[in-house]
Length: 133
Image 1 (cartoon, rainbow, N blue to C red):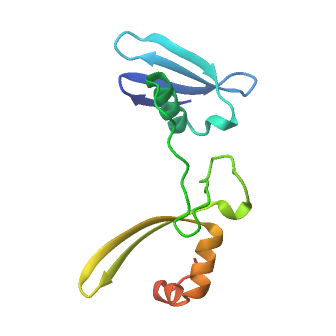
Image 2 (tube, rainbow, N blue to C red; image 1 turned 90 degrees about the horizontal axis):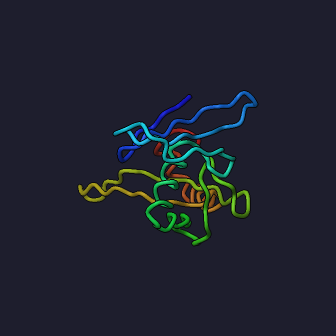
């Protein structure tokens, strides 16, 4: 059983005797049930379920798909259904680069194919880090 609190609501995930995942949503102020539903693989982890449940209730659009900064293809992250090729798995790059004494933070998303291509073209990156990425 797992529980997340968000916006005055308590989201509790549990397994029924058959092993199916369910989520109960309670309003914390009075413990009244706001929702009770079975989860499936598309719901992902509890945190993803909570975000989508709240967005649906607010009438907000789902977050846009991540795109590769190099080739602009849609990428997916762990726990999501892959939209296309196996190489479209997202690789997030978080690095600190110092150029002429100025520190710059680089945060970008690449598909696995572009990430591997960039590493192959720039072998100094793995030499600098000293490990196989």
